[in-house]
Image 1 (cartoon, helix red, strand yellow):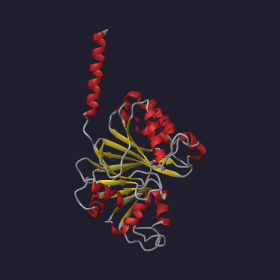
Image 2: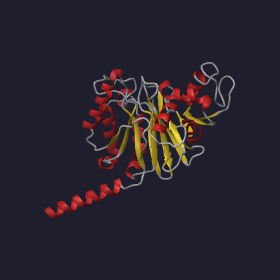
Image 3: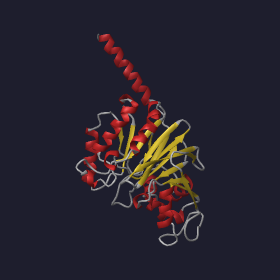
Image 4: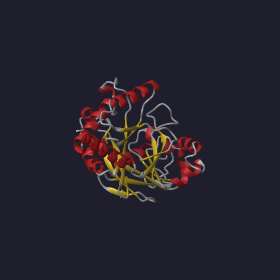
Length: 317
């Protein structure tokens, strides 16, 4: 009996060691990690294949202030302006709420030509309400007023894989519910045989009376089983004390873990042990952030590798 237990332990340890030794596929530089109040730290994440400077910006609530933080942390060895103009190859906007687009808008005069990617409804909102020659100059190549053609506005069709200009990556946009029927977007980024999944704001299916997350889990489950998906960026905006009627299309630790358990029914629980889940969009005040982290850690029965990103601090997936 002793030898059987020893063999099982050694096999498990070898498997865990093999998982840990897998080389990183992506590098991440958070430019903003909060879900509100602090305009210098709103949702935006740079993602690139390792050993490259071919970054895409996933949402753009805070851009330049986050780059400056990263430069101060010696993540980048060039100026913030050079990172903005040369390293960021494009922007992916999950939805048009200001805490996800304000950095893109404000920094557009000093930016270089590149592509802005969004689904049709989101793109229409940005063109009609922001880049419209009234609220702000139209830095795009279509829409209202006089297009300055600095940005190429590329509308993504949900469920279709599209090349990301000036990178080796592709993207597939998938719909989310953020106070149904308003839609947000998840972006499934692919480089070679590796994937990363970024979710914009989303509520749980049960509260939203939607099936968007269920369909998303079905889409990515095989990638987790095959160890091709390197991590999920997903929001947790409120602690568990927040009533469902006041979630406003967001998640709590309870709801995230319920959704992760639904995902585990498709992947098997073992596939999620040590799997990277990056927690985004924590809403102030600070006491809520402390609660959210504590509640997530206590409810993490699946053994997920919970990552709480910090502005301007690089990590790998």
